[in-house]
Length: 83
Image (cartoon, rainbow, N blue to C red; front, top):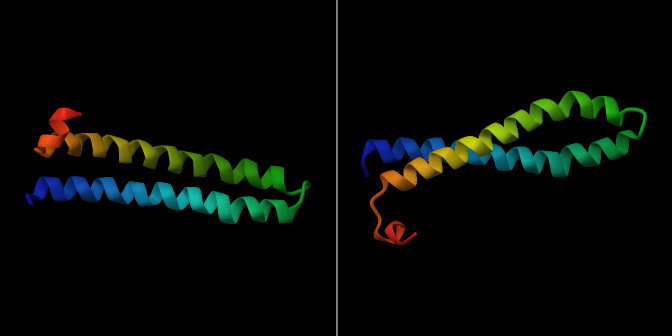
């Protein structure tokens, strides 16, 4: 495996792990916590937490997709020719 593909794989996997981790945090930690906080506190917390979390999720999703496509064009695989 040459160095370029190794670097592309790392640059593809790390944002992917961040993307999945942020989604799991949102679904299993943040939303249940906001439900327990109740209506007086949930909108204020959500306004401050959701914007940075969405920036991280969208940015890591975009990086995962971009590096995945770049890596797909760099890897010489006969199967990719049919796709």
